[in-house]
Length: 423
Ligand code: UD1
Image (cartoon, rainbow, N blue to C red; front, top):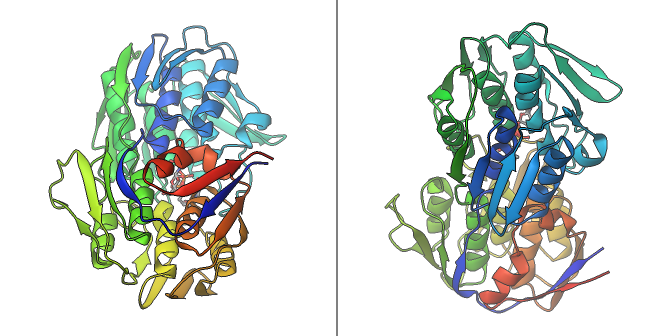
């Protein structure tokens, strides 16, 4: 297995382009299943989860053409509404094919994603919603098996027990071809849900309220060809901002914007960073200038628009070397502090009590061998490695490759001393 070797020390300086959002691209790729006409996408990031999703769609009969960051999908020849364990087990987001497959084909067989390093992550809310729309859904030999009799799913009033991003997306896609009106209450308000809704609307869907906690969908007969540009990745943006902040850097990120990042930007400013023109939502690039030493900042994760759980690990890395004490509360996932143990190996002072971490910044971290445990945990280890004394070796970086587009190349552009060693 490949590993990353980072020599800590250099300040990150310069300019780098942010890629399209993984968490928007994944559901939008699945949206192609709803139509027999092509879907043309641009700004699709080059990372392993996208490759896995394209493989999954191709084996169902979708024709996939990929040229750089452009992907064209044609599901006119869709023949097999099946998502097998071999592909689903590497990527939980594969569950996003369930709603569109069922709506278009009247049946779907999708492997249960199973456990996950960051918590149990069940899909009961996806299933509950589809049941309410008249589907017959059960679990058979590890697969969610869904079908319905008659021509169409039935529009319904849906309420999820908790805010679920992919749950909202799955149900919104299923409802596009249902008979009548569907209302999703307690819907996720994440920008990626809005990006998916915009793509679906350009395919002919009738959706209102995306971005609020009540989404209304009026079912239509069919969806048609469309093209859509994937929004910038706000988590990649936040990760590079944290890397720049931790190293005392001066970095401009292009192809992204301050929109959707209000709370992350506020916290970075609380930590002492200057973000040029931060208050303008229309900024087309973000310029961060870090102080010589950051101040510790406390965070509490919650659904959008509050602080994203996908940025928690990166803030743990910057607090590890900041001045003062910070409290980090994780409220979305029950087991998302695994990076803390690895950061401790680098010398971080962290005490964990349930879903709370109390951190006292230290003057310096020291390079060591650490292990990546999930996608964002890996990013936090990279940030810590960039400021640790000496060499940090990060093993199991396949997690990082799932969700970051050419991260070493981008960091190298900014002056980091980082290299990949092939196993
Ligand atoms: C998505 C993101 C992920 C992010 C997470 C929370 C994608 C591809 N992934 O994951 O990067 O960390 O949102 O912002 O967009 N839950 C249930 N039952 C369900 C569904 C969810 O109990 O049926 C629970 C989960 O275990 C978790 C919480 O609800 O505790 C939120 O999970 P959810 O928003 O569904 O996360 P994902 O959509 O899987």
